[in-house]
Image (cartoon, rainbow, N blue to C red):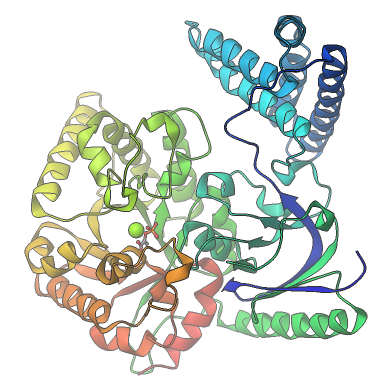
Length: 542
Ligand code: PEP
Ligand code: MG
């Protein structure tokens, strides 16, 4: 290295980060089988990878012990034990020696065999070990083939350089370890971009930079204002960027004086200013930014990055935590919106030609009501711990609302029979399909509120895939068709006594704030980091 390298991308969050690069390379999903002549050397290669994995796990154990406590650290202890398990090791070595296969392939086969064995056991605890076997095997395979999984073992927060990150990978990243994302692929409206905004970190997508391992560990600056990454910056650039960063920090500090102030227009109209979150960890930023509630909890993130459905109990705990931490402020949980870019293999959804137009969100819930009912039970049980509203994604018809209401009634009557208490819960729907927007006058009498999902509404209205960055030139976030649908949806809601908010990214677009206020929008739900700036904008509006 040595000479400064400049890359350009599309910025999805304004801010400046300075730090070290971590090149994130995914492990191959399909492990290739190779025939090995020198099996003794291959066994040595496996042993070396195993030793490195054990070292990583030891480090993780010690770190977890320091940061979060013994109970959480235990898992890394168990992983070390599993990795040293004699049967597991024998199986791998026998395969290398007996079948002349490469170490990656032998680990992959042993993983299949052992996780299947654990899954077939009666005991819940033992079944849970299947995921651990997968975890340790993936760790060894990624060491063997020189890819790097998550930067969890890093001591310092890093700038992640990746080809692309999908939502299930992003949720697994340790947020305290992230300074910025820079990806070669991706688009500004993708969920990864949205997560970056929620986490309050500068990010670039669609960046023209190689995924060169030589950059790993190099110093870099991500300028989210200009959409530029500098690798090995020279002194002049470093000084300039440090100054720019200081100015941005100063600007942010100035906004602090809006904390505790009301979100009202100059003429005294109150607007509810809420936050979008993807996980419980995001609540800290919500509270730090003095947000008035949660307008969108993307509950599907509880389902991502794992191998099995979250249980009713796990979900209950998550919802209870959010509600309790928000101390009586409104929390709107969206029921699971799996599908399209948010894939979880264990749902068993067949490969689709057009996943964004496929089996996703409420469609899965209505086809597999048992999954839906587990989530609803967890939500209703948690509802006594705060002020809960529930909303349903991807609605297109009144028939769906009626079916949902029947299922909700079933869940409530089951809880009644079990003498389990629940609170009064508001029910609303997302307006994120042109179908729902256009018949919003028909839907409004049957719901308490609408929340407009402009990300999908824009994608479906303009027929522009939100994941595809090469269509950016055609994408008009202020397209009149979308704005008219927002206006009509808001009018429909008010005509029938429902309230209407916006939870898509457009809600934070300050060029539209005045327009939204004129339309009569009651609520705006945005990434927590935008809260104070938007409050300022609203207070300056008529
Ligand atoms: C939307 O579509 O605008 C929305 C808020 O939901 P998501 O971005 O999760 O699809
Ligand atoms: Mg959506």
